[in-house]
Image 1 (cartoon, helix red, strand yellow):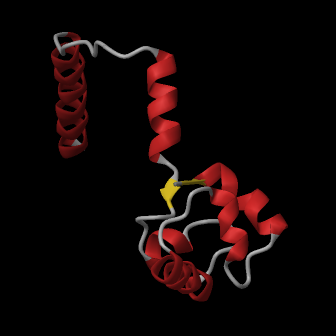
Image 2 (cartoon, one colour):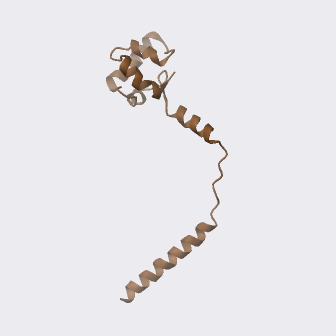
Image 3 (spheres, one colour):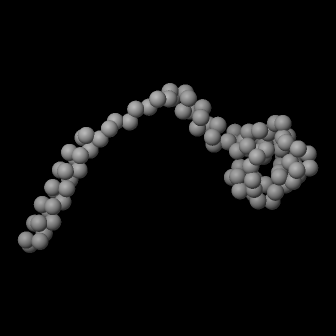
Length: 107
């Protein structure tokens, strides 16, 4: 019983101490506008199909490891893509796949 009482007192004291310490914590100040953050986060989520490796390309919708390899092989044979739509030239990628990939890919 005494041990339980000691544990409760120690926990309560810790909670009070933690709340007092957090009152003096510095506040976060943002230096970017919401528009800047939105634009940066959107572009950083896109996969550059001209520089991506197999693992990165595999993250695109409807693209598995073999399609990722086909994209890289097409890139080696024909040079850099000039538009995401050019992926349609890669065997196994059609218009419906392009529609799913476009929001997540860039050149």
